[in-house]
Length: 320
Image (cartoon, rainbow, N blue to C red; front, side, top):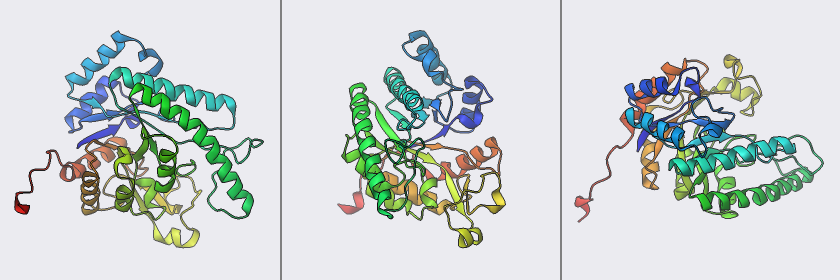
């Protein structure tokens, strides 16, 4: 298990400068954006695809700094009711899959996407309750759309030997572990989770129980914390539409690792991930409005360095 960083917080730096900095602070892997919301500041997907020279240069740069790529990130909405937006997101995903295969990176991180509530709707619709009954009907329509799309994309990913790691994210169809398991069951095992605990905390989900439930369906992990502010939550709940930069008025905030849950919690989460066989990167995603990118990353790295297991477990000699 190693420590990685999702690189958009360092977008104002060149890839070479970002790698030098990250290697210096103890990072082993990067998760660069190649499209969608993460952008492509550190890895231009279109310029690198099918270009052996560009890929060789990238490999050399990674080797120079003792770094690997844990996943390519393209988070967008391939199920969007606007055909142009959906097509653009689909192109990003398929090109990311091809590039991952060419770079021998086994994983693409992404969102499930979110359809409209009916064929005539124009806006994605996040449904959170089954009543009135038209909402339940809309939800099943959305799942029909999703299974049709993801079944085809999962087959495409399988052809290229690449896993699709979906971040369970509110305002997307798959936002919690049971939805994740349903999509995996209705497609193939290339579909799994980019396990980001930050979105689960504020939903009231036990992240260690979620890890055990998902088991070998976890393809990648984000290290990102959340702090729930009880005074605000008691007044308005956790479905909070207050802007993220109005920090004092929100029911919860994304926080740097250790500022939402303590070190013992993160050690428990790391241990549970090992129990289910996950031994990849903990890719730090910095979205803490109360810290700078570098300070937030460095505090997260410091805590995770004490939590991760570097070596494989030994024989249980005491059980013989």
